[in-house]
Image (tube, rainbow, N blue to C red):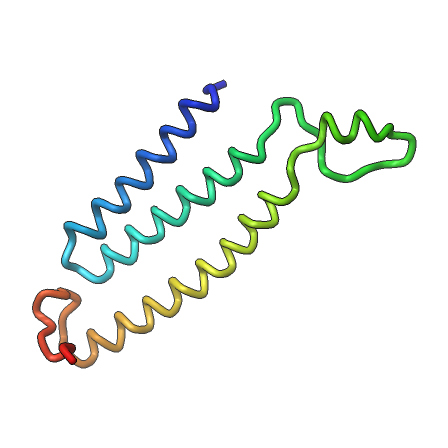
Amino acid sequence: MISLPVTYSLCLVLFFIGLYGIVTKKNAVKIIISIIIMENSVNLFLLLVGYRKDGIAPIMTEGMSVEKFVSGAVDPLTQAMVLTSIVIGLSVVALMVAIAIRIYERFNTFDVSEIKDLKG
């Protein structure tokens, strides 16, 4: 199995790949995909923070001692945060796609540098 510091650095690499796509690409669809990549790297990082080797589910069963539960259970807070982040991220992506479709219908392009009428 890959060690945790390596997986943390892989999350960072994935985040920077998404950031590179946001900064360098001019196509709105590619920018949206880059944002999705960044979001997934943050979700993966949060899951790795709550990881515990040979951890048990964060559900206390009958007959389980409190000491065993506390020392062996994975952190349920990070899992709840990731689930919430996935739901929020899905709605944000849906909004970005809807805006990109409207921009395409109005300007017939996904290239953000060609859209000059959006200036306030």
